[in-house]
Image (cartoon, rainbow, N blue to C red; front, side):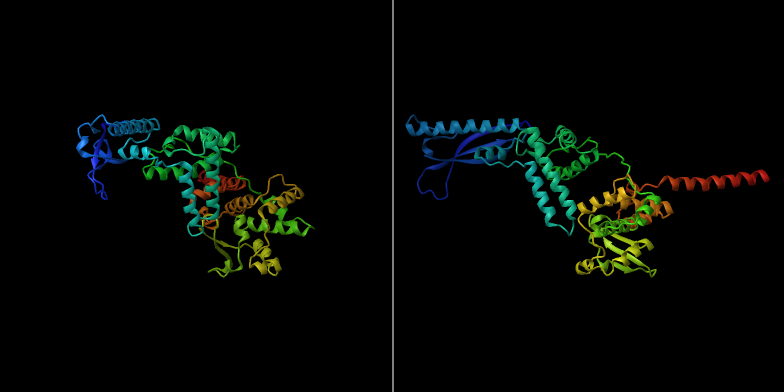
Length: 412
């Protein structure tokens, strides 16, 4: 920003505790009619002061020393103005004064991001889930690494955030960090939350994300077909550990629960619904949004199998769930034994519930959304895909209906 007017003037000012006639010399900095004062920490006799010039009168050593000091301060003031201008910072009387005093009032990207994350952490689990906090932490770490890689610096002024920064950050995530497009967009979305705070507080004049496309690519979400699910559910497994993992995976296929939700599923969250049947009623860990799931016979059989499991009784949980890493490791072995080439994860189980178990069998999208614990239908539409068998079945019904109508018209 270029100032309309800039002025520097030295003047004398009475000190509160001064008993002699000397007065403190101050520098008044004025930018666009707004002033700020800075003490030079020097005293001078008002009778030997030229108020118009703002300088000491006389050729004595004392006057020469004072005027030399004031000249140095004036040079510092002009230097402060140039530094502010070079760094695209607002040229104000206060900013010039702060620079001369060595006060750095800049808002730094990583400092602001860390303060934001600290506030998020303080609101876990009341308003935010641990998973959300973890994503913000990972995004902060990525941002720190990017600034070091691109700008060879430990932090940056938020005023330097611009479109180029965002586009280069996206490039770094994809090229250096080897993130897939959707993962890169996810981190940028979390970074944007902090950037918009800087805009709202007035630390950043405009949104550097303006015009940047954060859209994610549509990804085909894997799920099990009815045949594949049946093969896993009925496969004879001699290993107790594989059998337990298979049961928990199948349970998720028939309930739509995510890994963390089935791991934390307590017996108190199994309730009798208004229809007299067994339901799961719990809040999802990820969103803290309620899931209400009537239990299907296949899921009920698995619950009965582990009803007296000692580990479950001690922990007051429904199923003996291992760590996510171990579960996925054993699921890979189960897939091999069942001749299934798909990578089995608990995400696959959730997708299977949404597609093969519910939508393919005519359960309305709104009902599936509620059971999955989604906040809106858009999440469900993105999450669940209706399988080709369902589409073919619907089209066959339409084909028969149109054929009957055509036959009726011919008879007439």
